[in-house]
Length: 234
Image 1 (cartoon, rainbow, N blue to C red):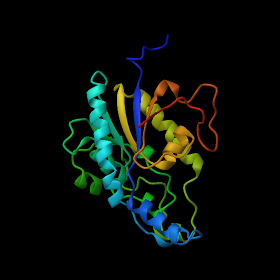
Image 2: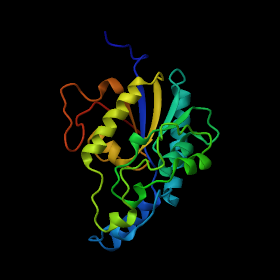
Image 3: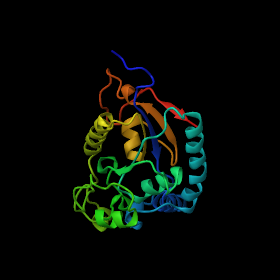
């Protein structure tokens, strides 16, 4: 039997606000459309840009409004990748003093294709964000492989798209296994491409009932799951 709307698991997916890498890459390409940002930008675990920090205020207003109009469905769990730009976006959305449980999940990290997709150790993250649960980080090197940002700039292969797709499938199963009915996930462009099959802007919020993903008749396409029933929120 199908579950009632009140019992269905609702997930708010939020792409992180603009990062320093996003900003510097855009500036580089604006000056030279043929430029390859990875060859010039070595920003490990890039934080938010000034524009990204400015995007946090309307995001905070959004979640405050959500709290007031959906009191019967409060956000019960915060999830982010181990990359600082998602953690900082989550804190910007709900406040650093939030009492909502907050867990970092490595499977929702960005596809390792740029220097900003390399992170820092679990110990360094735990020291920086002591109230977050990092227990799912099993190793200090939780990104794709042991290549370095310099090697990536020199042409080593990025993480295969198939690896990203598998990670997202596993992550969605993990979400389904959670007891919480309403979850907010702060994630990346590549992850959103797999989930929604299209580009999602910085600081954009989308809501999805997990029962609708993926549609049963759909298969995993190279560009992601397409034609999934979604609600795009302002």
